[in-house]
Image (cartoon, rainbow, N blue to C red; front, side):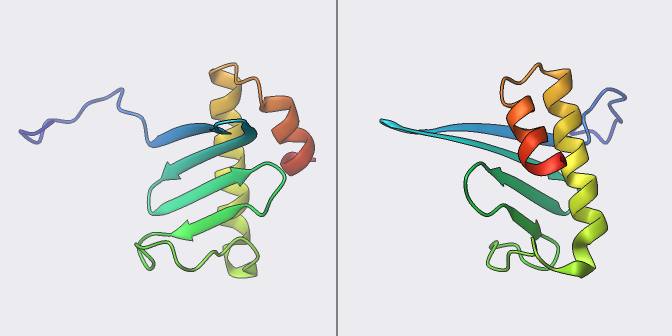
Length: 99
């Protein structure tokens, strides 16, 4: 990879999982794909960032209609990842965000 060689099985996205801090349980998933970052915050407002324009993540585009198709794509990509990895939060995610 460092020599410029292509890796055919390299994923096009990365996902992180959060389950809260100390005694507070809080489901969170983040997917980064291309210049976009989508964060599913169960029980709170989700986040969508266009990192090509906002590398410090100061402008949440979650309610911006110009990003509607990107949001749909990112939500589906996260759902697909959750299915593939048998994520226990999948049903909750589908009910709250994919319904």
